[in-house]
Length: 318
Image (cartoon, rainbow, N blue to C red):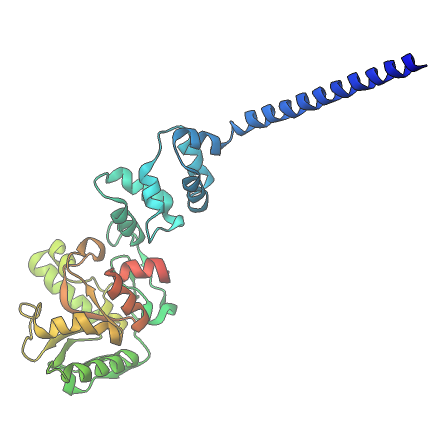
């Protein structure tokens, strides 16, 4: 009887060992299969290429499946990583960024982002878009966004002749109120601002543009003036501002009034629309006298971050 029990115990023990080994084998097999399956994943392949897990997380959040798939057959894409870490990166423009980079290898990621966001990967006036009037003070008009020839703001008011020289002037009411507040503040520091140009109709802008075009050709005209429908002056939000002492485009830049505007205009909602060294974005040479009303929130951000309105619009408004 004892021998039978002992034999039974041994059998149970052997069975237990077999079960344990079977369990270990099954577990190991599952892990092997799981590992083999993992090795087929994009994550594994990208890690092998040299991406970190943090970079993979960024790629997943800021690119798309098609882009990730394309990365599996090439070396680590350092430029793509620099793109998606840019402050003003927009996922919707990813393919445009990459295409533009292929055409302009000399540009860094910051410039690629700013050029594509502002539509500068297209030719001027070819990529033609209707301005979104619902944006109100933040609507954009440039060489890609236009107003139709009948557009006229419905809140235009006459500017008091105390503030301008030349012919009568009109501007949108909120812009006018902001300008007068700014004028009063500047006057306390013996800065006397004066308006030279304000709201223009489609037809009046056509006359300005045609004068340049007829005298010096289309290329020059496009560098110095907007085509009709593409001028900010038609919005009723832009002013050409000089001072009583410096009244021309040749002497206003760097004048006390210009310096005062650079340092203070944003507090009243105005920005220097065509900034120095930003022609590659705006499409226009610097105009120290051209000031655009966008409201204090937008103006403050643009001033503090030294960007153009085109860049601000693309990232925060559009």
